[in-house]
Length: 243
Image 1 (spheres, rainbow, N blue to C red):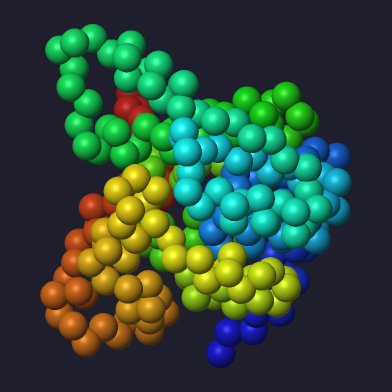
Image 2: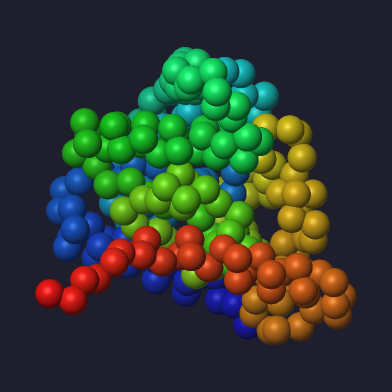
């Protein structure tokens, strides 16, 4: 039984307490994609801190076909926002690579999220801010994030909530249905998250919360992704010499 209002109120109080301890008077800086995660995080921060202390950052890489959803979110919440197109930074970094380095598909996929996180910190450190992490438990569980990209941040309100729990919190917050039900995609090849993962978030969320997944192949894939990506949830390893 998921009590979305209780969780929403708890998250709001947690954000307030976090800022009292880690950034009294600071602003919450949120990367706005127009999807449910960034929408819910921005709405939680607006309720916790007041909309005047929330700064949205829209970061298209060239042309973003669904950027209207991001504009809809900042207008709905009434928060200040900046638009920073990262295309020049993306193209510039790729062009700066020596000829003998041919970027892999993985490198091309993960570079934009890392540039976006650098952008968020540039805005945050220029606007007295703290950067919000917008990843949810379901994405974290299978490593569907970029290390030092969208999995970074100073505080994370959704890290222990599944996709469907985030949607329920979004409803309680009064967010428009088209934002909390927007189909998540990688923004690169036109494929959805579920296409790339090979299973639905409904199946994943049920498995996370109950341990039940009738399809053995999907269960094995989820377990494999979880094992392979668990390192993303930990600080990087450091050698400890015996002195």
